[in-house]
Length: 295
Image (cartoon, rainbow, N blue to C red):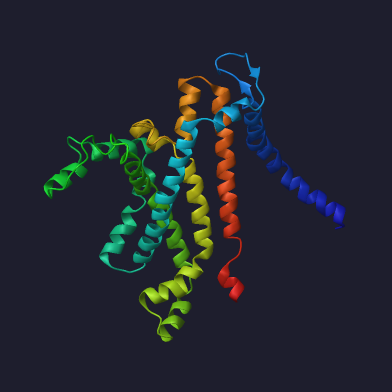
């Protein structure tokens, strides 16, 4: 088969996938970029072209920067917690004890229930009148927040972050469990013969060999956290005093409460650029396996 016929053969297989990708991914993105340059209420066909005015307004919008700061705070708090807890639990479940069997049977439970149920469940837990969190603290005579966990501006965002960690943790445990199961038993046997045990074996053998899994997990958690919407929206509506406002809850407010769809689309475009920028930065930082370079 000559080169031209081979290229035609390959193109005939790729063409349907490329066409679908262009129709359902590239075209909506291009349309969003175009709509972000209009002033449009979304309920009429009348649209006014304003160029980059929506982005200039966004740049001077204090709420946008507050929401971005909250997203980045959640990325640091929830992101680090998910990676560290995911590795720890996955490593702990490699044993054959009863506790590890119990963990294996329940760790994916939050992933199979609706995000709405997760939000309602944690609202009950945080309830200052009958929630388990305050009841537990009262039982040990520990202080509780006067306005409740979700009513205190300094505690609401960590409270939402903990609920998000509880919901998302199972996926990362599963991811790291798959990575740990992929490490050959002979590697551990050789390490044990050399005297590597406990934490030393983890840091010298397990942690480096999980590099590719960590790369996937870090990028995925960044995308997941920067696009968080349902939990803060259902639990606090971005309050109190915008303490839990995120980029997507603010986008919803501008689009479906204030009917400023042009500005909301500019927010969506900004969110897209920020998420792509963070993902690109993380991929750049993880571009080269340091252990591979040493080998």
